[in-house]
Amino acid sequence: MTGINAHQGSVPSPTGMIFDVDGVLVASPHERAWRDSLTQLMTEEWRHLTPSSSYHPEKFTTHVYQQYVAGKPRASGARAVLDHFNIPDAGVRAEEYARTKQALLERLIANGEFEGFADALRLVAALHRRGIPMAAASSSKNANTMMAQIDLANADGAPHGAEPIHLLQVFAANVCGRDVEHGKPSPDLFLLAAEELGVPPVRCVVVEDATSGIEAAKAGGMRAIGVARLDDADMLQKAGADIVVTNLDAIAVDRLAEGRLEH
Image 1 (cartoon, rainbow, N blue to C red):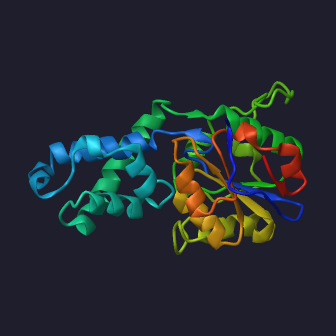
Image 2 (cartoon, helix red, strand yellow):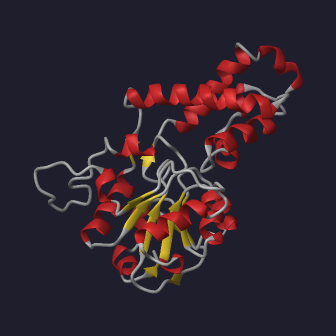
């Protein structure tokens, strides 16, 4: 089953679509970078901290990543993970952790260790063909680098011509990595995306895979589609998602283009 129903709703047409990137559009190496960089620190520079913490490599699960890191600004995510594992002086060490993670992430991206989610690319391509205004809104400052390398041409089976169409090109607004006063779960980034799309928040639908992103969308007065790629449908529903799907092919594109949020 690809769709998990929370409840159905509708928004006034026209609809503005706002997409998170990591975990929604792109299978990025973010989680791996956060996990491996902490393992590096705790086995090298910070190994003396292990006895006084609750950290163990096996405890850094996908659930931990989704709950404490996904969707949040880099500094907030770093601090949240260190606090979760009771690592001493977390406030001081968060900057080093974030810096170490970023260096590893950049190496992974440079090596091409990421790919677009096929279902998400089909949805974006279908919306683009229908002229639906779309925005990319990720806390990650690496989102644009990845999207610029993903070819959207023929993603939904429709001819787009011989020239490649990169994912980055189809968004009418792009606020990825932009500095806002408050990161998710505050709605600042999504409100900025709506403003730059020229679509009132009440007419926007956010597509998110993280609870912090769902909460941010709802705080901004927007509808939210939760993408449960990691067996986390319950978490997304509890965060307030209007509908939750495990695959974006479940979304009724024609209805969405009419301003109705259904699957």
